[in-house]
Image (cartoon, rainbow, N blue to C red; front, side):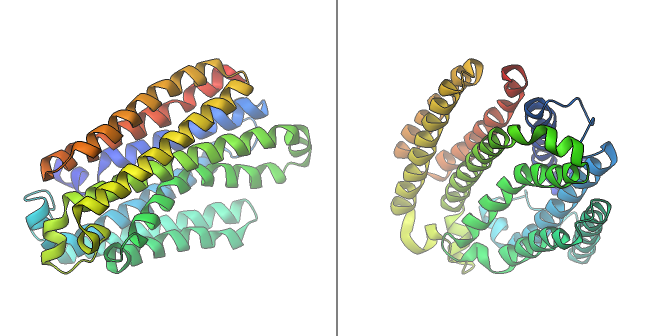
Length: 312
């Protein structure tokens, strides 16, 4: 059981669930003036959305490990269990099981909301994860951007389907329209934060895995341009993330969200620390620690959403 949970990267899945719950309960409902599940998505619809997202994500992890199993023998000895504890054929079956279940749940949600056209979002996400593992991850920066985009998507999905649910209730929809601009800004802030931190993490991981990727012909940015150029790119992305964080603070200051303004000082300090350590990094161990550091940064950023509840 423990091996399976590690295979599907349960800490990452938990972070996705927490982020989606916080978007709903700490951002959307408080800003729009609703209690929990008073309007918008019902409990059942929200569970469908979360389960669909989690299942499609699991499918992506499984397929990524399948395609990376040779390179990971060198990059991460003993960590990738595909072909060891888990037979390749079993992993392929699990990939299709979770991916199909995730897409079906997403289609079911869209059917309940009378928005069947948007079920293509779930098909699109599953398809991108497949092509990332099979092709995009070995194209310089393309794979990094794809994963960063998909990492930020879970924040936007909650608001997208919450919005559709509200449209089915004209009275509630009319009542809360004045809150839409603030919701849009907050959701875009957290999507932007997730995108930049995920992109930074992917760049750092590529530098960490440069030896195995090069041996097995995966032309990542790090393999194509070398550690020094890739490190400079990571520093540039980290500085952009820092500028974005300061801009977000100014928004919170103008909105008189004092708790969030103060909290983002911590994020600024973490980003400055990351820039300094990235500048000094020159070994696989250094980049491994920095990749873990970006996980902490992501967690700290996501938890800041809880403060929105006390600001509005």
